[in-house]
Length: 418
Image 1 (cartoon, one colour):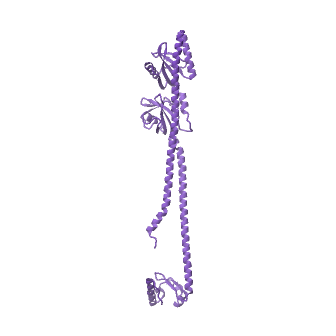
Image 2 (cartoon, helix red, strand yellow; image 1 turned 60 degrees about the horizontal axis):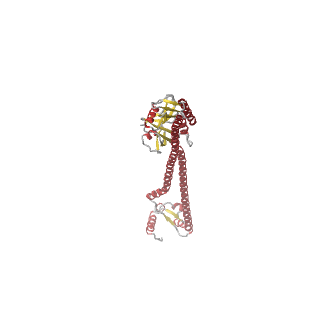
Image 3 (tube, rainbow, N blue to C red; image 1 turned 90 degrees about the vertical axis):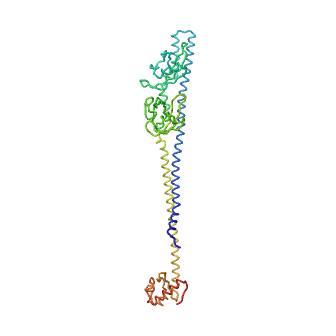
């Protein structure tokens, strides 16, 4: 029974099914590994950014707490010193000089910009050398609030007309039996820049930045890695859609949450946001997405090359398997052909050695075998007979009889003797 075209098509499809499944498996596995690698890289970077954001936020919070504690110590020590000296009934001028000396020692010891005392009318009654002469509107409002409510005040960072940065802490103290405001003047720039610029891991774009809301603007408190001099100068609209700092101030990002968007340069970034306790400040530790995924892209290329190599190896395996199949088939055909040749040789030897006339005719009525005895009997050589039909080599009446006999043999499968 022969092989039909449909059967041949099914066999051919089955022969390609395994290689196709292997290709799909390799491609799917490679793509899955690449996607997983990107996700793992992103998750790991988020955890690193979260750790850095927590570290920096705690450092800033601790620094503010230390300044507040210094203010508390200053309030207590100034009041106690003044009361002690007054109790000794020292000369008022000597008392003031002694207080100035005591406060100046604190300034030098703690590296403050200066300390000032203000009366209830916000007149400066004492100041250490180097204390800023100007009383800014922000500071004046904080002094009024402290004197009115008796609560310590934090004056958010600002710049004076000379572009110097200020951060003031305001409290109250009793001096001359009256409530006075005591102001601790600090320069936030050096400490903030030094602290925030230190990134614990190798990076080209990683940075921590401080910011707060100033009306309908995002005010950057610290200097920026890619824009020097931005501290207290750079403001961006709080409605800026993709700005991470604006998203935080709009309440779109939870504390210690992940924030994505485009930073002040317009570069896509990934970061983690933290609030600073005891203030209205916020901090973001961020890194450019290009840097974040740079290593993942390199890994993806290696993974893709590995997948391509696997595909090439699979293709080579399939080709080698097909070559082996062809070789086996060729060997089988060769063996079958050799067997047929051997059979024909044996048949030829038998027929040629027979004294009886032996001949064979195919289904088309053409002679394919004509032994020596048949040649002697018919008087015709094998070359004249083989490949020709009855009517081509014998007279019409003889040919007709032979055709009839041949038909009966082929039809019944029984031998006849002539």
